[in-house]
Length: 276
Ligand SMILES: *[C@@H]1O[C@H](CO)[C@@H](O)[C@H](O)[C@H]1NC(C)=O
Ligand SMILES: [Ca+2]
Image 1 (spheres, rainbow, N blue to C red):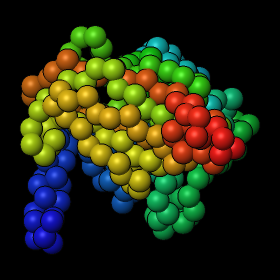
Image 2: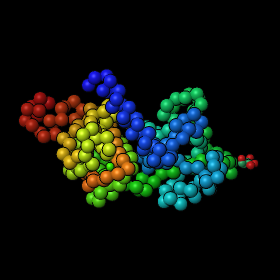
Image 3: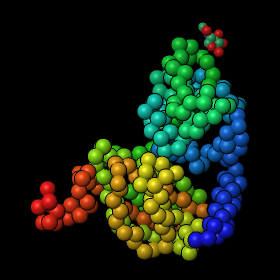
Image 4: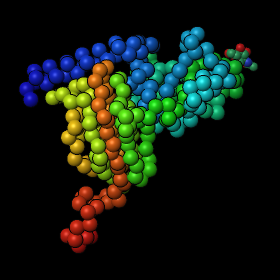
């Protein structure tokens, strides 16, 4: 692909993303950080909320009520950190489980997080009448994404076997034990088709996030081939735009216990066995 071609494609993707954002109406700059409540805040079932009155208005009790109102709970530190690892970045301190306050930072910046990355932790607050925002957790709010650690599991597009809806953005973060690998196998696949998969798509990343390790982007109704990760994590990202849906997809993953052998091991071929 020529450079200009590449640049054009990048531009069209940026344009598309901007369009999506505009439609979502959920983006804006706050403290110098571009916030989006759709893309990032659904990551791993963890999301950020502030009071309708504005920023930093919730006591601990009120914060809890905000999460429970939507069927969720206060996020734990671990849930917040897990979400952070897949890109959850919010520059507003909020309550989370057990009266702790902090916020997740992915990219270091001077305006936010003191140049550090990680959970910027204000600790357990003695005064529960202090007012902050809140971090909630609700993996079942929508069957869309999550952090998966089981050895084997099915993954469905949101609403499956019904058609998925418009404007979905789901991240599945599969994290197995160190030394294991992840094998993906597609069972059903039907995603709005277009030549560059710009409308709706499923992406696979051989990595803990959707920044590195790009494997492929899939749409249409051809079943993608099996894929086996090089490490113990995989990230899947599903995105649908604002029109035209399709049947969706179902896939499964397995843990593969063979850090040194090639994927062929799982078919138990005699040559592989004799190599051991
Ligand atoms: C607790 O925090 C609230 C809100 O900041 C403040 O009004 C109150 O005086 C604090 N209470 C104590 C005991 O420090
Ligand atoms: Ca679509």
